[in-house]
Length: 122
Image 1 (cartoon, one colour):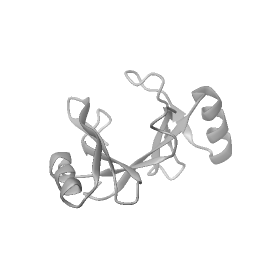
Image 2 (cartoon, rainbow, N blue to C red):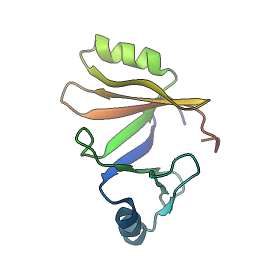
Image 3 (cartoon, rainbow, N blue to C red):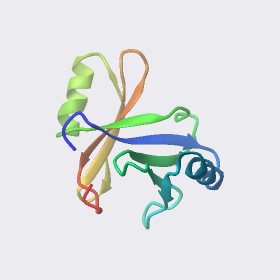
């Protein structure tokens, strides 16, 4: 994916087993829990393009969050700050070749950022 593409959507859930059954049945999503990501089942839509995760709901994570792929999280977070946004979660490793972060825009929306290549090559 290219800089600026939405690459992932996290849906906050309180019961991953229940949510897996619900979304899998409702939309036909393939939902799998991968080694190293226990408690965070990931979904892929039938188009094999759209995807995301069923993330544990928490006090600070109550609404779905889109994640945008960027060339550089560091540069993007610097621009967020310059433009008046707020960094909520700094650049954090996912694995040896990929990272994520979260910011809040001027209207209070939380947007995730992704940089890198996952073990699956995506």
